[in-house]
Image (cartoon, rainbow, N blue to C red; front, side, top):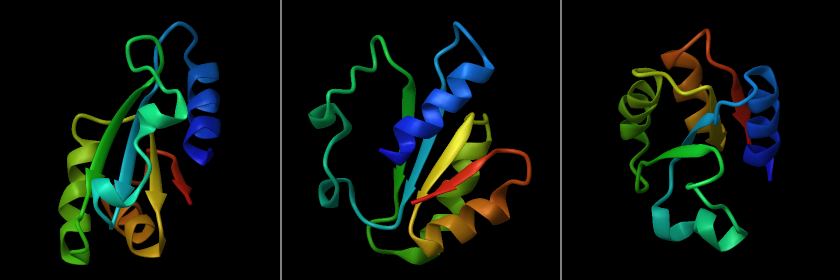
Length: 98
């Protein structure tokens, strides 16, 4: 839900252009509901660049750096470790902590 709110705000800032949302999570892709299960359709909606650390917090910094080059429009960081890694990777991209 937070990611959708962030996407809406980014899309409002750049009408006609899909938002590119970075998703940073310290868990694994199987530990969270797939985005398409929530009704997300990447063919018509914003683009999600997802990065998962698979329980290895030391990977978060590298994954955050992957999201900022080429840059995403916003980073949604799940949990404190992911939020801190995103904050260390960028000062210019908005970060939404969830």
